[in-house]
Amino acid sequence: MIIKKIHFIILFFLITQQSISQKDQVYLYSYFVNNGEDGLHLAYSLDGYKWEILNNNKSFLTPTVGNDKLMRDPCIIYGPDNKFHMVYTVSWRERVIGYSSSEDLINWSDQLEIPVMRHEKFALNCWAPEIFYDSDSGSFIIFWSTTIPGRFEETDHSGDSIDIHSPLRFGKNKNLNLTYNHRIYYTTTKDFEDFSETKLFFDQGFNVIDGTLNRLGEDYILFVKNETRYPPQKNIRVTSSNSLFEGFSPVSDPITGDYWAEGPSSIKIGNYWHVYFDKYLTTGNRMGCVKSKDLIHWEDISDQIDFPENALHGSIFKVNKDILDRLFTFNKTQISN
Image (cartoon, rainbow, N blue to C red):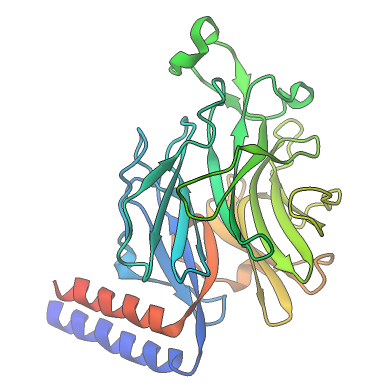
């Protein structure tokens, strides 16, 4: 029975690879499951709609940095140095983010902690980091969401409650009844050794997390989540600017529907922009998607996509088919073993 199952899996790979051979590029999605303890998961798609797990849904990389040793919200891009660069959330309560790189998505560099908010004594967290390569400056931009209590008082009570009994850095105030009140910050680097001073990246007067960037001609397209809990928002919006660090237009109305959404990742497939995201709480945890030709009028196509069960907050990116061929080979090796 086991031998038959292995033969079936190998036959499936051969048929799939025959289909892939007709394409120059395919789509990959990086994601985590559960709380992110076991690390990086990958899925692939030929059309951006039907997604299949890789490595039998086993992790490609186990987290080693941070006190909690998590690998949540993995964001991967392919850089001009012919390497994949990944940033990720290492903990619910730390002031650092994780980083690693790879040439093939199988063999990864030693994981690093980037202390992006360690200089902020009262910062609560560093969540959902994203990485973007800006060809104009030749730099990688890393940005993430952080709550610093009291920094933006006008929205200090707009977010979800947080129990901060444990962080010793709050001293006598460690039992304060705080709520998350995020803004998006950034740093830049050319070599992942030296990093610029952390600065505020995006603030339009509301509790905001989960930023993700894309480029359209001379413009930068930024998708964000309105994280306001009171009154409830929890939706995805879009803004744009012809300058990376300033001048973003007022965010749009929600592009997602009557449900809670987070963790957007965007890509253009054919003539349509597709934004993938987590639908949660009010709909159960599942992936959703909206599409648009003009970034103004959006259609919810969540019922047309098929993602691996329990896939959570990641990033979508294109790879050459030889990369996927290597992942298939690695997959078959793991099955044989």
